[in-house]
Amino acid sequence: VPEDLPETFEHCAEVLKQKLLSYRSQTDDYYNSCLIEFQDQLKLFEKELPYVSQLAVDSLLKEHEQKLSYSTGQIRHLFNKQLEDWESMK
Image (cartoon, rainbow, N blue to C red):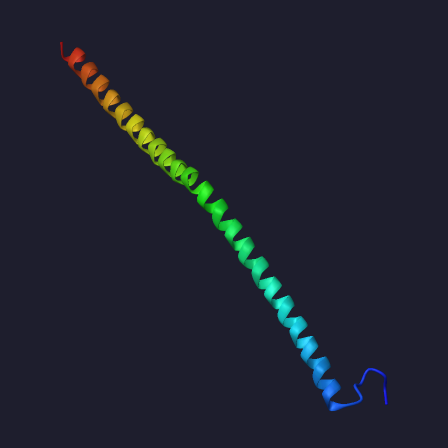
């Protein structure tokens, strides 16, 4: 009989029980560490969220400023062209 095999059914059942308890403990530890890591990620996300919102607002503001600048340039160009037309009519 090999040394690794338990001699009785009761001993085999006890070894199996101990291994299962050990696996359960390892699983619980892993689960808890995953929860802690997830909580840490959520805290970081909550901390950074205001900056993301500010970046979005800044991006929208920049986009609208560019559109305003372009529109103002077009109006200025058309106005100057109209002035030139009026000057040439004199």
